[in-house]
Length: 478
Image (tube, rainbow, N blue to C red; front, side, top):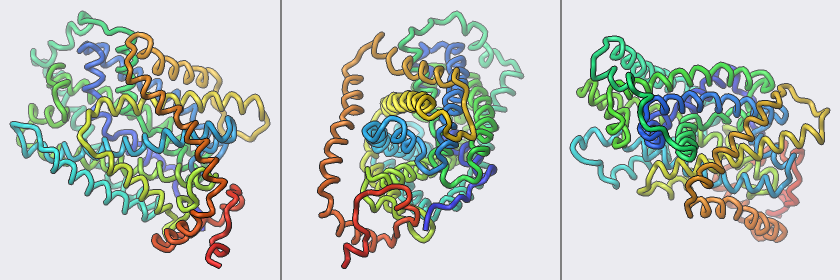
């Protein structure tokens, strides 16, 4: 039993489109506009810049998934290039960042569904939390049915997502084409507004790049993609430019209907937009947007579970996380992710969650590029079906340094210190992991009972991939 290569070029495009066009385009416009000093021209330029930066970074990361075509490829790549401690550091960050992103999106879904029923006041927190938890656990059950089931689910949901984004984009174009004064006036003198500083631009970029988060999903599931050396780069080049055009058009549509002040004060920008355009259809777009974000969460759970699966095979997570059910899915890893995300569905500021997620993401992107350069030097003859050009690699490193350091230098805050303390506390966690791993015999029976509870089995290729130093389960029972 092992993970199956069942995702072709078509389903790869579907998964990439679904995970990229998720919650970000419905929540990030608020943050981008806020940190752009309400400057419309700068805001749209930030969205265009985010598209370019995302394509550069994604194509650079594609070399990881094609060189090591296995699930959890970025994690495995870091362990191969920079060592076990750095790989564990990335696992430490992702162990919290994935549930944070899933919890954030679950809360956004519940807000979009419930808010239309409270037109004159904010929706209560308790119904939002309960609905978010119900959606979250339903998607967890769907993921336990295997990657092909998830892919077919995304094929259906992508139709609704494309319909909504095209409707918003075309409506904005029509309104500007009609040339009503209130719609066009905001764009006429947009360059005369106040310009943001360097730290604000970095913050705005982090907000915009959140809308493109998830572009590494194909690299994370490279072990389940047919012909990854060809299909991963082709999917990135096909999907990301299309998403970039749609994002810019959607933001133009938002700005054609709403004032900058209305956008930054709205918790659900698209619902507020529809309330201005067709008030009677507000509930329809709320439902449609929620459906599109559901598909994004589903892909995120898929990607996160493959990271836990590979880390378990490499001995940095308990053995039980790499065991598969009858649908060739790591059920225990999925369950752990859902439990962590459930704990995080609490009242919080979504913008702050996005900022910290983005900061940690770009720390990891920088580490990936450093590892790529190191491996190019140490092992130049390693087979590389796709080899990214060095300017892209150095560009990704420069982007990471700018997004990480600029806000801290120009507007230092104590919360940045807390963020880096959390990130690098993973090294302390690694020492603790090594200490416990040497004395892990007491956990073997727990693993056996969990294996029986979830009805899972170790993958057939586990002993070939890594030697964890643990006994076989048959020996434990005996």
